[in-house]
Image (cartoon, one colour):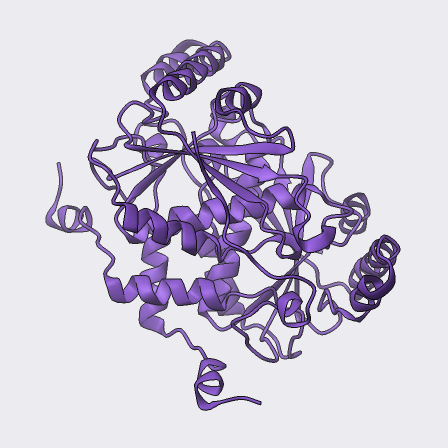
Length: 218
Length: 218
């Protein structure tokens, strides 16, 4: 039996003005590496976590596990992890490309007031495995959907997020002492951006340009 | 040198009204399995692809490859693929849970007017491997961000998306004859939903409930 409120709600419609602003949110979302050091208010952060809870997950298993990293020693280990991985990565480039790579700022680990590691609990019992039998990687993809939801919501609040992937995942798990069934998905630096741009920093600095995704027909 | 427009644009701000409506978009996004059969307008679809182009990707490598599946024979193969995988999945449940599983409608492959397979090109040269050396899976995660952007944008247009994962990925690649370097990420049914709900079908039918994601401190 439906009451009036639920019938009205059954027709939730988003108009052209909202769609234009949503498109702007996508345009202005950036991978941020340059942060101010002032704190993210706790009430905003709580709100971002609750919005991330709404993300799609396979069989509604909600395998995403957020780990907020506050401890100075652990943060220092993460920075060393990044610096080592970044030095190795630099070694794979030559000549002008290596010079350019060395100049890129690829993480805001020192300045960002909030560090957030995102994991996927591969062993979660929630959802009873529905949808993940032939493609267990969809659990990790679900954690990516939650991470991405957090990111977009943060941008709507004016917060910047930088996804750091130049890391040894096994070392991250050791640093954060997470359960063995948790897979590391990504490490986020979160804070107020020093500046905002419509264009990715990698594009502005000449690393590469973006292209439309191909759409094939079959 | 900045002109007036770019200075104004540097302060792109999203207000509380937009944030409330964006939260509603997340609340009303659903995994849809019940579609009307009328077509998705091409101009809307083009717009969704262009919005998905704005998604984050590691090193801006944009590895997402969309494959639009129109051919009736290929669609029939995908349906058989799903039916086989779903029968195997059912075999893993017992008693009441098996009875409930058998009643669930887990895909809208027959009705949905648009079928879209999403792949990740693991071999893309774009971005020159930046950010993906220690975690090559971030390329697939980038495709998930594009898929998720497409999904949210579709909902803003009133379209429903259902992510089908109960499939054998190798058979999908064979059916769609995709390049060997492409990893299958997900298969989307897209169309106008028959009905809209704030609550996931799996929750309404008693398969399981959602919970807030845990946030640990370290």
